[in-house]
Length: 432
RNA sequence: GCCCCCAUCGUCUAGCGGCCUAGGACACCGGCCUUUCACGCCGGCAGCACGGGUUCGAAUCCCGUUGGGGGUGCCA
Image 1 (cartoon, rainbow, N blue to C red):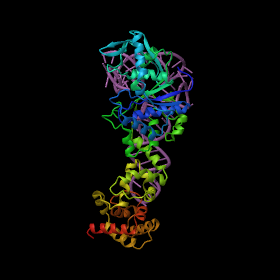
Image 2: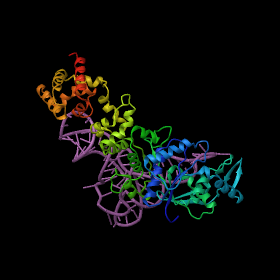
Image 3: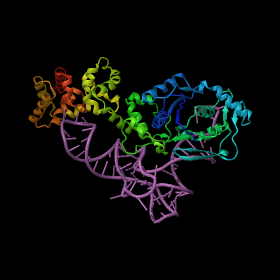
Image 4: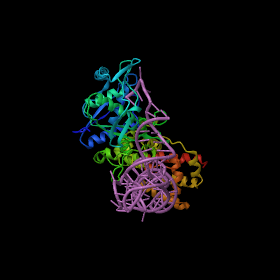
């Protein structure tokens, strides 16, 4: 066990789009480092020149920045430390701890004994050396493998806590062996985090599952919500309060309380949690948040920030992911398409009379929520309809749908002219 | 096959020997509120995989069984 100020590293391999599991690992490293006032290093494991691209590296930076995770010092690139790894392999070769095998160098693992280490999440883990093969430490192209870079760097950088996914648990004894062969008498504290799994309880995979963080961002998941949700995958706050700022999670978080069992990624819960974060936004913040999604619409190009701010109170509590927003407000900015099913249902009511009465009354009524509300209520009463029924034909006529934001607030924003035009269009559609 | 890990409501979790007739959240089902939907509020359904120990006492400790999962690359 290493003592002194904790020093952690998040060490992603830039071999593809940032992954949910990668993000969770980054987060847990960061949470613990910040919790105990330690150092948080970022190490890019780009030893595989074929897979590690500059694009992937910048995607990692982007992801970390989006999630709000910061790091101490400059990022460390393994690609620039190849000499150190090469020297380590040479040393093992000289000492007879490694040997050549068809152009590659393999580390000779003892035939007996066990290699063990302590894991904060799992307790003591032991591997019989007999079960560990003589693994490759230098490829035939001369490059060092992941195990070497890992052992050399963690030792050289003085890493005290290694926090990573459980899928790496089996590689740990190899790294421990190499570390000892480098002359180290101690090992860092390990914490192997539970895997994030899908509905089938299998490790999230690029092929089967939607694992790209970008895809959640593009759907309109707020980074604060994503970080909060990810923190809950393998850990729970002692007081049971799940939705809370990252700063509070930093205070409460401890690796010792991390669960060992795999955690299923649940989009429903993420969505619910995101809804809470969305609802906590003020009008201006909400408008700014949905703006990119609105802009992407055919009608969204000239929608200004003020209009969106005005619309915010109407749809905020109905928005769970930001990409939901444009559809709900489209009718305010362009001619709505009438939903056939909703139209049929609404016209089963005495729609003709309601629309005729509204058409007439709305031409005169003061254009504000209260007056419109009172007016339609009165129309309904005359026809023996509760307001809930009476508003339906008007809603479909004006918004195209049977459900949507509060009607009178919507009408107020839409304006008298557009409202009357749509009421009349609906009346003629009814064959009135 | 071999090695390793795991096991509390459908899901995420609280629980770290007595506070548990197991708490919260999501989902689901009722109800209230109400201009639709939503939000909010109230209520409900639902779990310690199984079998042995240890102990005065076990969801909590130990062993086994079963069931899941991960790894087994000149990927990381």
